[in-house]
Length: 527
Image (cartoon, rainbow, N blue to C red; front, side, top):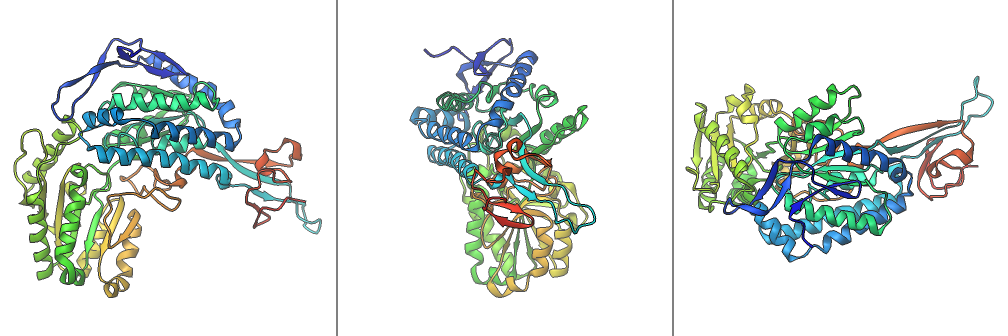
């Protein structure tokens, strides 16, 4: 029987003790959707955190193969979410059904990929240093190291990816793989979507015998602070605005026990155009770049928001073609009214700046976003003007013309940290661009040649992160299998008898994993 009010999921049970009514809205009409939710009380948030902590010892102690089974069961449940579910997500986000179906597949694929990581065993990071021969002045102890989950993780759902970066998204998958129970804060823009996915996770948990409290979910716009400050929470995963991410970082740092916040926040993802490429295929590049800017109404964290080229007739022709392509684009419905309002504010800030002119686009059309192209004076970038460094979350980009290679280098040096940077060039000029590549790799987490940053492959080698303010910690990634590292910490055992060691460090190597033994990688048992 359908429950009239959506409920929080706490320790495997349901709760709705609050009084503040919340609703999702139809992204196309703005009308409230029929299902109501109650904002979590502080007591409910505390209960969710406590449930996660209670589940932590038993969940972390499970063999990695059992956690892998859980992740695979989640994948099966996510794949089984039907057409009615897809229609609900479309209503809450205005994203097309094809996009949702693809994101559903990506979400389940992430779970299966982390299950592969668990079975592979390299996440243990097993290292063994055996005692040195007696010829050493002081015999070395038997020292062994592996990695364990840090504890319960708070995960905040993203607005722009209602599946892949939300309830069962990459942060949740990485935390569960690491052995860390999750308390998930549903995004206010798609609460019905979050509820359906959370129910799928709980079905998977029941089917695989996971401890109660391994996954918990609460609703509410003001519950995040309670969650981050709760002493049971040991790490935070966040995808959203710079303002929101920074607030969480500051809260976490002010706790009696500070904890890490892995926040993906703000990026303008510069695209650098080299002259020969524009002479050879400038029109093609302009059309492809426009398509990348317009994809998903520009609501991608990897949206190319800054285009830099050197002064030339080829660059002039490219800019004209880019503007033509952007002007042809039909207005698009954004994820929600709040996102549309923020996009409008970003556009107005550009229009109000004396060093910026609008080359394409126009006034907003009703409740839809219109594509925009702006041109900014290169001096603004060189002087570190903050406006050029701020993300406009929507279908807009800024073109900057630099005089020559020297000014290009100085412009790139002035950039803040980014998720991505793209270099478009012909083979010979790319080979001569080692200095540009060197500059860019200091600024970004992912560097592309002759491609476009929208679209992030889920694989072992992917980095979806970058220096601040792209993320709060450039050493991590929120996409790809390295994402598990954020929720693990090393533990060292010295002079332990074999029987007391974890399986990953025992002499016989019962897990059959590759380990670093006395500086050499091997799967062999230790004598």
